[in-house]
Image (cartoon, rainbow, N blue to C red):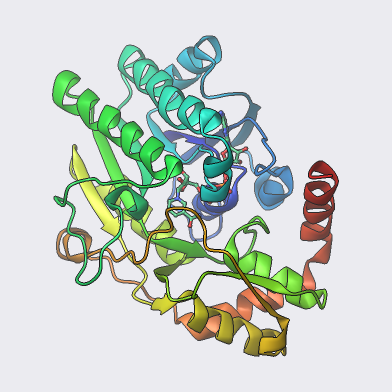
Length: 330
Ligand code: NAD
């Protein structure tokens, strides 16, 4: 039997890795994938090049807020995996409107369509940023949501709607809250790819504040493995943290990136801290481990070196993106 999966935001960083995995040689059998993506600045068809010719692949360019497009499309599918979002915290601090429109209203449009179309399963990709910031310990899934940035608030709002559709309508929804992802095909505005590409060009890298903000790093291979466990074996109404098991201060991470790129601390520019910058994130991923058998498998230093090597070898992928961003900010 074929499972028809609609992947929103499938031309972005994590969504495209999920699609390449689903349709790759080690993917599950009997899967057809439609990507629905608006191709915003963060969406990139090149991310889907390895699967474009796959007979089970289809690409639809469109906006998740467009009900007339989304309704019939969702009705043709068994499952939705919902990645599409405005995802960069700094942009949400500049202007929050697109974040509410895409992350909240877009999610509601998809949920309405899921209900009308009799969708089997809706997997919602959320973030650990919905919890806020914590000094010590790790968040279990039943911790209260205390989002701080407009981005995190829009993601928390989306999640609340997703859970409301489960409680009110009995829709089979599953929510994942992952930590910071890293790996290849990551848009070069986020810390790791921004630092790598700057360093490869001999440019300086901006380190926020005292650099002691702590993040847990999750490789996209581990993340996609976790999403697949939730999609195929998770509980309806289940919320699952997905962690990577590597907590680092930004300063420590910067040191490792400098070493991996053969650069020194003189390449680092200390810049004013981000407004409302969360100090530390840490998810407790016991639930997904105990219920679904998840554990991160990717070794951080090795994967970071591979990531640097990928950016070194794929200038053709990121140089146009950086050139476009610079032109746009003039
Ligand atoms: P990304 O910014 O690389 O990709 C987002 C994709 O969504 C792009 O392809 C974009 O074109 C598409 N999109 C945006 N608005 C759209 C709209 N209105 N209609 C249709 N498509 C639209 O994001 P990512 O890093 O791959 O993140 C994917 C998901 O994972 C997001 O929901 C994000 O909140 C979540 N997440 C990401 C991280 C991380 O470390 N990157 C961590 C936690 C959670």
